[in-house]
Image (cartoon, rainbow, N blue to C red):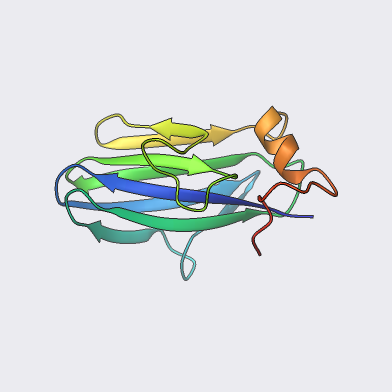
Length: 122
């Protein structure tokens, strides 16, 4: 079984950032084995997806601002998490982190065998 988590990055002003996801002890980069470096225009979102293959793995998402102020929205229910549709939010300045424990209700719900809810998108 696997669980898809969707990540939205929102920029209040033009923003450059890096994004890294990890599960358990193994590091999962969202693109080509390196932190994903992106730019997003003011008032816009970028979207990503990370799969959790092992139901015993925790999920950590870290967005680091190079310039601007990105906010991190994370969901296993919504494919386009945003200001009104998310399960986890991090919106501090410069470095935002979302951590989802494998023991949390959200992770258990998402990785449950036979779960009919829309968290399996792959």
